[in-house]
Image (cartoon, rainbow, N blue to C red; front, side):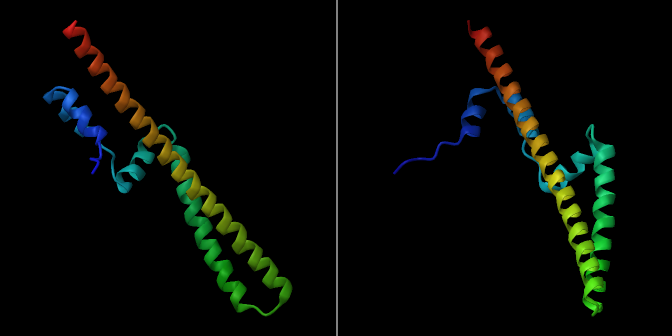
Length: 129
């Protein structure tokens, strides 16, 4: 039977006790915290713009969908269907941009976490030498 190696536990054992508290502070946040972090970043103006764009596109898509279902004229159905499709497409692409930004922030957070651990381990190696 093989034991699964937990890398985080190995790192905790390698660093000092006071460093473990800082390591724990850098833990991966949940989804709500990640969304709030988007509004605190450098691109907050774009985040707000995309947020309102998603709201407007969603409302317009629902309106187009109801109008599409309520009409019997084929050209009007094509127009309302195209409006629904385009607004849904725009809202989904904006949401995709949100997810990419959250992934970017998570990757940056992990890189900083690794840099911090490397700096702590390098400092400990220097003190041992």
